Length: 167
Image (cartoon, rainbow, N blue to C red):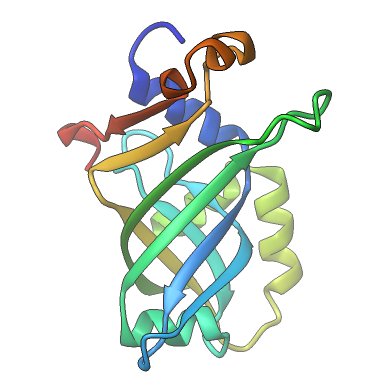
């Protein structure tokens, strides 16, 4: 990996659209679910957006406890025996109406996200979930060669801080 580590990790996350969202309900029971996500385009802050229905468990959990975790995997398609690279973070989420301008702009920048939004547009209670990541993203393996990680497994684990001008 060369250049600014945050810019590299952010660009890799923008190439993906699927992640795993972790929430906690009012009884402190965890819940994880796969979701489609988008990242707000520049110059907006580095926030993640999800379109979902207000009745779903993840949305209900966020209403009672805004603390979330989020994971995006980067599998090795040719070397399937090698564990996937991962970016993960913790943050806070809030529920926004479907007409939130940044949420709409975020979903319009991706064909798969705009198609998902159009497919779900008939849902009565569709909302956006906005995730505001904590300052630190935890990364494993992304941008590190397999041979380099084999020699030094710790080389593949690093943290990236979101710059203040993107928060």
